[in-house]
Image (cartoon, rainbow, N blue to C red; front, side, top):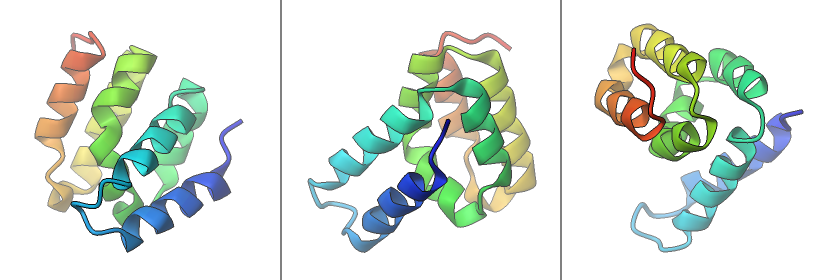
Length: 104
């Protein structure tokens, strides 16, 4: 089961870091690890997370997609792209679909 509190802790740490801080890589690694464990739990989480959380998570879409290799994950991301057009995630999602080997 996906631990929402763990994700929130990681995202809060990530928000405190400068975008060029090398330790940001560790937050990405942790997010990838958690979000790649269970496709269904990840999709449920993403469907209900805030736009700000989704913005920060979008940086690891490709890696999560590569591990999940899931058409449903990409469909979820497409729905969220429509829900939050201001996040401009379309290109990131296109790349995630490629990395995950998902044809739509």
